[in-house]
Length: 355
Image 1 (cartoon, rainbow, N blue to C red):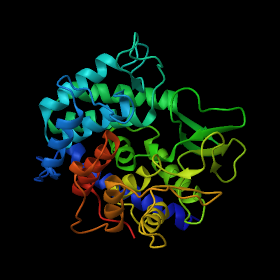
Image 2: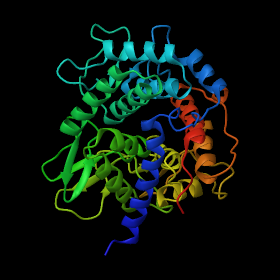
Image 3: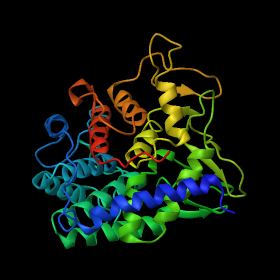
């Protein structure tokens, strides 16, 4: 008998496939128009954080760049039908970050260094966003060469970053560094549910299993007073429930804050992890809503959440109808600004919430 947990996962996947089909088939063929995010937010982000050559600058980390930021910008550009910017960002990304021995991308680029890429390891979420954005662009602008790029990235992600662990299909955070003899380490915020659904519909492979098992993982991996997802999770090769990963602070913090964004974007705002995040961010027990919490000690951030937290909370709290989101102009750095723009994109594209 299929459990209610699994039925909900399958219902989410079926609805996500219906959404993905409109993009896979092409809106024009179906008589539909693309959803329109707020163009002003993308313009502000582009002006503040993108160089003329297409590099996205992480102002909070030494003006470095990441495959994550490049993937986000590619997605934003496609969502806003900004082909010129998309092409600049993709050209920089492939020239500076693409690894010479496969189709994945180095996770970080540092300015003013003898070698801008000092660590050739990838970041799975960055590569997923790049593959997803490129596949979307191939369909929107009828550019089959982009679909070939996306398919190559997907194939290497499956080969290098997808594993079976105690009956789960698991997404490793990178090709190297997260597999141990008795366990693996996973980052829940790397499960980008609308992307997984779209890639499952267009590329096949294990993306459906990653979607389903990612949802089940998030339903189990909830900790602390509020039952929140952690930034990093440890999965035993022998099975059993997930635990916060050793070697990382056991927190719901700046990684895990993306979990409710991706759930709400995929029409999954009713999932426990999203509801728990909203409950934490709207808690009235303090004169401010803290940015993060640590599970074992229940320690709270001494400073309030920023505009990206507020945007994600508003999106997840109101899974249908109009939502007023903060603006990029209120963001102090790249990361906050990027999540704010992505929240605006998610608002335009989200599926109806699955109760």
